[in-house]
Image (cartoon, rainbow over all chains, first blue to last red; front, side, top):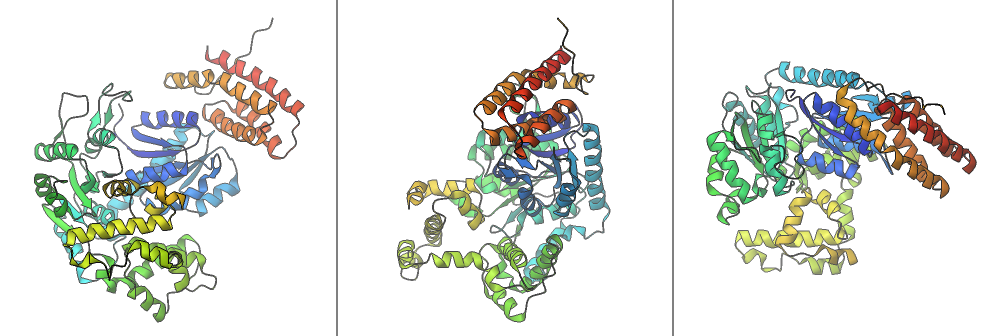
Length: 467
Length: 106
């Protein structure tokens, strides 16, 4: 068996092609996942980080190139290779201009594809390993006291292997902090892997984490290494740890205590040296209190806790972030949009950004893309808010509840939070006409997360679809 | 009766690919049936997409000649230069080519 080289995602609507390249890449030591359309690709990218994504251009009714911006934005650490039957130079130029790393045609020799891909992946690794000592700060923007404290913690953790628990609202950049912790540590030459514990079904999650033996279950056609073993000398981010099922929490606790994993269907333990970083947007102490999260696991994970402040609590960083994203999007879209006026910047600073940096990033992207005169317009940037305002008619307001008049403020914080969460979801479902995928995009939450909330609050999505 | 000339994949010498090539070859009966149905029922959009997909798959599995044949049909349909008679002629060519692929695997 070849040594593990990395994780790849193949996006192609033809199963035959997926089968061929899966086998070819797996033979060289890559773990390969496949999907047949862009929706499945988006879901896969939410669950794992990939070293490279191979994207077909013709996906039945979809244009594969339409998926490229999503990968560049949501998986900035992945290289994107186009793999298509279109042998067309103009198309290749168009794809690479749009941000693809390289363009392959399906008749290419697999050895050539592998060699070129390895060259790019190695180049990236060398670049990461050889840049200056503060290179881990890439993507971390801000000079506010709160974020400076985070930088300081990362520096202090440089030469230690402690388990870290990252807490922060959705969109605050938990994965970026986790990558920075990995990048600044002695493990930076090892692998960094991230897995979303809330988005993968329980029965698959165990096998993803710990691996499985051939025959352990119906689809286990061969031995497969788990993510713990894959990054044994590196770092594993267990994202949305607060959503991990209780049964797996018990197993994870044992792994952290004994530094050994037991693949599904195996009777032999494997020693691992993986550093674990966990992250969640949940109030984890609240989860512990309510019995949904094991207290002993919480103490095991929270050796060092990093609290990432919400953007509304570090508003002084907004101008720096605006400039950072403006520069990025100008470069990506080949635009020359100027820095915003003081009035525009004031509007941006006064807003509370409930979706945090992710919402700000999207607003700047919208501002750049829709700009017709090279200026950032508030209307364009806040157009996502206008939509909900348009729906704020009396009926909706009445249905959604007015919190000023509501008993919410007389309730204990936990109950008030739950009431708000339920009302928020009901209101957003109404706006999204029961479309949970759209709700996930607007709320900045994973769908699995939302389904869990819908279940918890007994909200019936179908009722919103009929309207 | 003359023997069918074998069409060999460029990967045939690598044992690793043999099960994949067998599976590709086994699927060709289904591909033929689908092409025949799409031509007879004049489902040209579906035919074009199917030919595009098969052209990519044929290239991938090391059959450039087969890929070219699929590409010809895809181009004809895209440019609206097809007639049922022409497409039925192509269907015969596919049948021959598929036999050659099968002969190449045995």
